[in-house]
Length: 353
Ligand SMILES: [Fe+2]
Image (cartoon, rainbow, N blue to C red; front, side, top):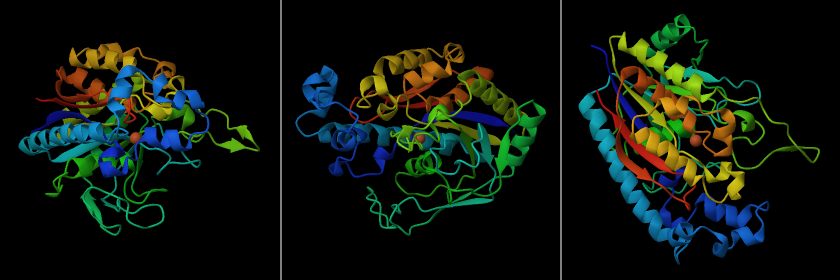
């Protein structure tokens, strides 16, 4: 019989790289982002909590503490998923100029492949990407698709959502970072992850998806910044899509874990903080709303507010919020990690039947 478990989590790459490399977005920004004025790079000009987190070891101590909390949280989420025994796991995640590029940017896409073959430990040059598991570049992670993806697309189309779907990769072999990192972290202890998966791509990056190619730097043509791209789907639309997904799956024969995968405000998407730290105030406001189960507060947020706060990836959570509002589920916060140094606030949450 159908049942739904709600899960919110992060796919932040910071859990892959060993902490001792100190390869955070902040250290990268300090080293190589020329747009940041020298005085802003000086810790003296940072918020006090940021200086404390940075400490006297460039955030290394804080990074180890953050990892401990997140890994504990991921173990709790995995235990809940295991005891729920899903037939399939659906993941809402962003595509950062990985599978979708200039030839097509779908607002939403259900990736209904038969299976997914990923090589996440291969770096751009094909060599081993430094990783805490010390797994080799050629290690292949395989995940199964599921027949419910076709059912879901059909149900969404019948419900008035002109949803895109695909049966094979376009530009990204296997899965993009939002999806594969989610599966890697839910299997942090490497026991295996055998649940079939429906990756559900959301165009979170909207007006900067081609322009910034999913990263912090605006592309130029003949020395001039590229024009803005059209926006991504609005929070309201994401919530409506989430609600329709919940309705469709409630009427299905399957038990489904619905996962929203993303950190919240991102430093590298927040120009008002010189791309150094995320919009902490805005994240705290969203967190208070989430804790209270006030999903409705998210519906009226505009794309302009989302982009001002660097919360583009929160659109993945908007899909989950719509689903949980439809099912009248209250959230249980497993972890909330507010940070200045490690790019983005991270929330782990459960919405149980
Ligand atoms: Fe992402």
